[in-house]
Length: 90
Image: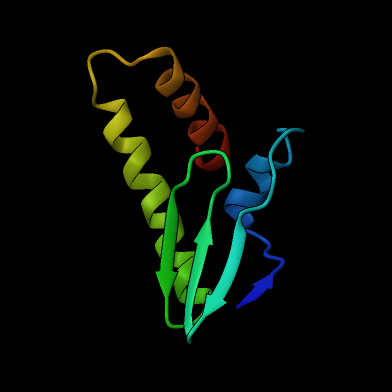
């Protein structure tokens, strides 16, 4: 397994810099399959290479944010998670 340091896309990176407690996602390669995983939420993306996994990861972050935004009411934990996602990706 290979673990690689990862820099988010410019959009994610710009928003993340404002959050001092934000940490970069974990990027791993195992058996030719790449995974990018957010430590805070457990949200992840996968792909045949690091860039594809990164794109899938960003899609998953947006999708999860959209699901949370459509809810009538959220638990305190999910309210915090939604605020985190909004700060991270807008």
